[in-house]
Image (cartoon, rainbow, N blue to C red):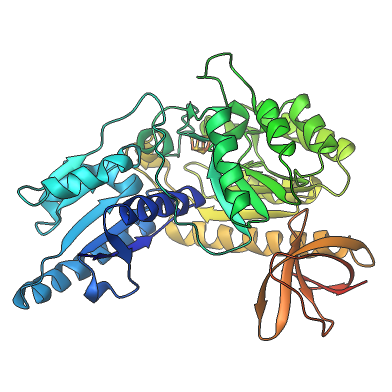
Length: 438
Ligand code: SF4
């Protein structure tokens, strides 16, 4: 008999990809997805531990599902509740104590054990958070979201231990998938009609270090670029000082790899970068940005920044604002610092910045990012760019340029989703460009 699964996904693209893997895998075991949590035999929250707010969201889901489980029990319906992802890995057994109606805690490295663990939950409550030394490959389907873009994980984990980050504790040490496994999955994605593949890894430039023969990221990109068809390749994220000349050269010379680099800078101040345990200073970051810009035409460089890292002074924060201007970063993700107790920075309690100051700094940072994005968009007014149509909203077709600019097509023509169109950008706003096809 078919069972119904409801899954809630919080956090990054890697979690979204894991959810697609869970849904695909469980479809082989008689589960089908439902959008109604009251109607589900299995409820899973796939969690993110980057910020406390995200962890709190997961707890609130569990609280609600406890009530649903009770109600369904009155109707003689059984419900299993599981927590997956980074909060599961970080808190493990504790979650079973905290939530007495929770059946299963499963870490990101144990996903493929889910079918057998679910069987075991008939008799007992379980926690599976064992770290793995290599990435498991299974031939299950991946239930990808219907879109022009598909996620493809090339590696998991991270060895960097930036002082604010939980990822090395939740996703474990760096482990790469083989080139063969990645190519096989890329071919499967393309055969289903996807037009864009986004390669995921915490630090893509470290790709291959644990594999035999140590293939590097540039080699992987070159192999993917050889695949037949009209499609695009993107990747995220890059660690500033790990980006090699060979990767820059490969992006420059390839037809399919898009001209975008997401290079988290986190702070524009050397002292703060050191306290963050980032292995570069502002001038090294500047050098890599200049090198990329010099070599790759129309490249977009995006970043991440944290406002209010422990001990950050007003002047140090303003260095970040200056850096966004000076480096002309096209777009940046921003966040107020959120202490994660397991990390080094999370223990610097006497240096914590108060919430009001963090909020104020985040607002200034967001305003700067907005104006930088508008400036970046303005550079393309009058230019003809290739747009991949990826959606339609209120009758207006939308898409993205190779360098990831969001474009609204203002002509009244009809397009296919997944169609490539050359269009001239006529005007721009902070968040998008408006163009007409030529
Ligand atoms: S490189 Fe990224 S994922 Fe790795 S520890 Fe630093 S912030 Fe976390």
